[in-house]
Length: 424
Image (cartoon, rainbow, N blue to C red; front, side):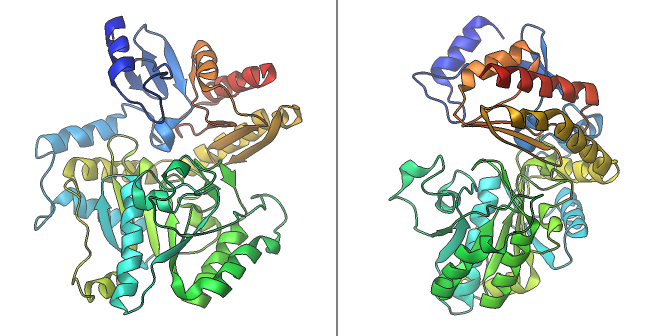
């Protein structure tokens, strides 16, 4: 890229959560391979983010490239209304195979946010079909579920990036997020806020929506598996649906194929995205039980009322099918465990630094939480100078690297974090 391209970008192109008057510098990437991003000037950066959790196999992977190339010679897209195709059926067979047997009906959509929209609409239509008026949802404080309006409505209204939309969004119920960490002794008192809410409001609630075990953009918080187990039990007791948003945590990121498996529970509705295609193209899947799907279909509308233009996109489905096969045939459990062990060894010593509030690790997730918000442009300049790509936000400096990262490459990432933390 030339300088005039970069200037054009800064003047005309909006980037995520970035001001148009004072944009954060955007670094020009011209290619990517393995776990490295190549800048326009030839420098290479070790990617610690896997493109926001998604590129679990790294970049430019020959298996996924081949899947994309082969599908392109057949068709890149065809409408899904009244049409089906082999990539969709192959992908959905795999999704049914790797998830709980009860989750056997699948809606393929465009993005993680849309998967959440679909899940919320499924819950609403389910209760409508049963002749019950249930329009409310329960979500956790510090939760994040996406940027579209329905998804925003179940994000924390006070402590999230969506607080300025208050007044425009449907009003739902929020309970205190679990305080007990993943490795701490279980504290049953964590359930009191939810139990109290259900005692008072259960008859209004269509579903509870949670990010299983790891709350992502709301603070990278990692909570105790017993909390999720208890949420499932409470949903069963009060006859409320449970929606698990595994868009970030799905496909091995936490050390289990799905984070719900840490608690040995099955949600009524499961949302998947991000790593579904190995970070190649956007695609999401919302899975539910046959009981819920058939109940919706027996309602007034006679069908589920949603249908994105690019639903079941063949190119995306072919890549996703190949990505899941690649993951299942790899030693991903060992890779993720090795990453976890190394992150613990190399990041946990930062807990002793006075400017650090906490350090958390689970699977291929490492989080250094500072006591004060960080200067994102300043830290990104530091990281690029160190030859790594790490995108902090708020008080958090975190890593979600591709699973194929080597120990040497991972150390380069953690050393860059240590160096900047000691300066803050």
